[in-house]
Image (cartoon, rainbow, N blue to C red; front, side, top):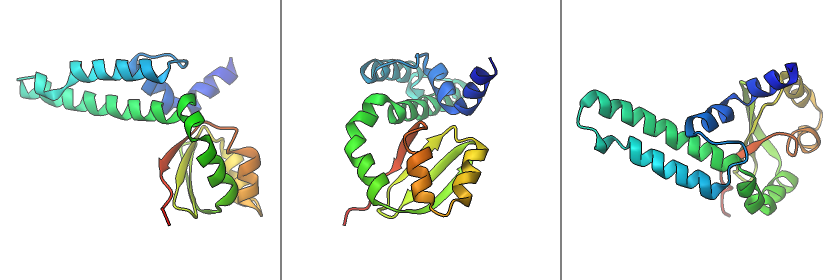
Length: 157
């Protein structure tokens, strides 16, 4: 039971997005897109005449858009499509910078790409931070262990 609570706490952002869109963990991208479109139809600000309702709809639609993009970015289908590129980045490009906040580690690579890793326990981050070879540590303990998403693309040379 403790493990489940810990898991839910560390994946809070993803869990909240699923709840907002009313989808299960196993939702496929096609279904997710359909749900997203229907919610956007329901909450589009132009549908509302009252200023208060329009403001509420703007906030709701922004939240729906953010949740949708997050869930698409962490979906197994998205990861499968980007696996070759991801593998190239984590094996050939060095870490140039990183930021850790609320169990989310953002890693910036020399090629200009950035990825966020969710649910990184503080003790794992400390080991990464104190490692003599952070690239190697991340390849062994972070890259294929935690849910991730791409946040920026590599700079084309």
